[in-house]
Image (cartoon, rainbow, N blue to C red; front, top):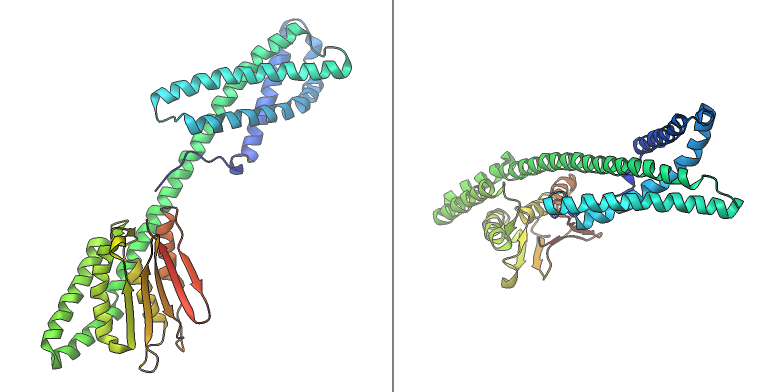
Length: 349
């Protein structure tokens, strides 16, 4: 599966991050005011003054946080934490740009206020002193955000991997259950019993094909991908078993170009679609079921005419399992349903 660089989305900006930023804003203001207090400016250090400055500084901190966020986002594209050289470059870039962001922002805010009021709101000496403290706070903020994003990424990746393993195990179980269920085996043995009575040679061939089908299921169910050639070879044996049972009432056409045989798909996907078609459609002498399997440059299509049974089960389980497997490769299957037709398009992987 292709794993792109971390894709930052709005899910990172939640109430936890807002509270963290509020804590930073309060800490930032307390440090500055406390430093002034140490310089014998006790009147500046008061709760009322602290609260009013917090209400001013918090929006500023949010904007600085956004700039830091954009910085981390851009650096994540070009400098990975998995490479030592890139990690060192990234650290120094974040360090120097973190300094520049604070210095430019402090000067810009003071300049805007100066142009608006015609006087400095903070003397230059205090601007310089505040910038030093701001740089320290911003570097800590960048490091905290990096830790927060990295932790979130690894946590979500672990959850995704656990979910995919669970769904993959479920899919493999469904494949085995679908092929090795008593119903399929019961029908196959009934067909074999009938063949033994009047066509011994065909009974032997049927037994060999049935063995091939079960062997393929056991050998391939742990694989993530299989070539189209392997799948078609297996499908020939499976189709033989079905056609022996339904005879001319089941018509399956397989049109695969040789150039597509090296393409890869999900194991058992075609078998599941054929099994679904046989299971959910009426098959009679007057209305034989027709299934067409056709390949093109990018996909393979399984199409059948819908012939409703009086009692129908759900179509969803087999398709759901196939969808889950394709999702592992960031691909989707295309299901097209009309009143008369059912078509599934499986992209090559």
